[in-house]
Each structure stands twice: as structure tokens, then as C-alpha cells.
Image (cartoon, rainbow, N blue to C red; front, side, top):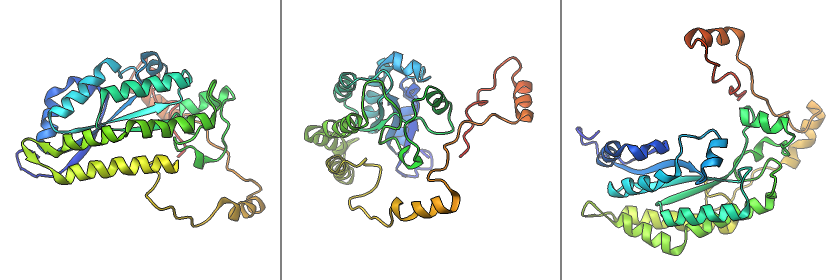
Length: 273
């Protein structure tokens, strides 16, 4: 892309290990990358280990922001709130650390065990799953029994995170960062950054996730219109949510052949979707 001078703007999604790959970040910037999406998720190491995200090391997150800024790349940190260990105070502390770190953008999601995954099976076996409607498993609302936070509390915290992160000061600072890059004026990027910040604040005010739609809501139908028909036709209101599927015996044998002595990593992670 660099050699051919394609001049094509693009964004990437990276593991947090990108913090140790300075040369790759430099190449991304030269190739035209304008944003890097990183699954930071949490700043608490023990929470990350419990979620099997041991590759995430919060002490390196500052390096990601620094490397991106040095190459004119916007850093976008993804954050999950509502881990079993979370309290309102811990979420507020997470937000404070994130704001001090000052990535260009941030997105927030409520922890959601997706039906068909190992995490969902674990939560289901503990009797924690409280939601039966698959439409609710969208990371914007609580679908399980949290030990210390209610659905309303987590929803309030979700929108508070968006409002406080995308403050007027941060929005202006982010726009100023994108205004001049490599000695050139980038008016389009500046206006785009401001527009995105305003849209996120508007979405939070409307209590809708910024990734759930646009400015105006369009309602074509409602569950009440087809629920009686579904009940009459299939004698159920909601299809039972799936558990993870075991691999067929032939694939289990193949895994053992390819990796002798190792437990197949995907033996409990295959979704029915």
C-alpha cells in the first residue's frame, strides 16, 4: 500500500499487543490508517485474567495511545463495564483512568454472555441468566443477575461513561489533534471528529447506544403484533436459547491427531449460530 501510494484511508482492529510493535504502527500510519480499534476492556488485571484475556496488560495501554498519536492515527479504546467484580465505584475509577489516558475515541458495552459460548454456559449453569429474548443480548443491557448492580444502574453508568468521556473539552482536543497532521491541514477529519463527538453525546442523551442506529428512530413493527401468532402457531413465545455444542466425534479425533496430548480449544466454544 505504501509502495503503490494507494492513498486509501482505512482503520484497523488490533490486539493490545500492538503496544510492542512500534514499526507496525509506523507502517500503518504511512499506509493511510486513520483509526485503531483496540479491545482494552478493563484496567484491572485480575478482571482481565478472570475473563481469559491475559494478553491484555493495562500498563501498556498508554503506549498504544502514544504510538498512535505519533503516527497521526486515532486510538479507539473498547471498554466493557459490568464484569462480575465491578461495582459502581470501580466503573467510575475505570472511566477516570480512561479519561486521563485520553485516547481519541472510546466505546462502552455492558458485559453480555452470548448464547452458544462457554461463558453463557457457565452463567447458565449458575442460574445467572435472566433474559430469554435474544434481541436483548446486544451488549447494551444487562441479561444476567449481577451480584451488585441492577439493569437500571448499569444502563445509567453506560450512558454516563459516554457523556463524561466525550466532554466538550475532550471533543475540542480530539478535533485539534486531527486538524494538523504531518504539517498539513485536515479540515475534513477535524469536522468528522467533532460531528462524531456530538452524535455520541446526543445518543447518550437519548439513552440509545451510538452504534445502535442514527439520529431518527424508525419503528416498523412491534413484538406485540406477532407474539400471539407465534404462540398460536408454535406454542412458544421465545425459542429456547442455545447452549454450546460439542464437536462431532470425528472432529474431536482430528484435533487429537493434530495436537496430541492437548485438549481441543474449541470443544466447548462452537456456537449454534
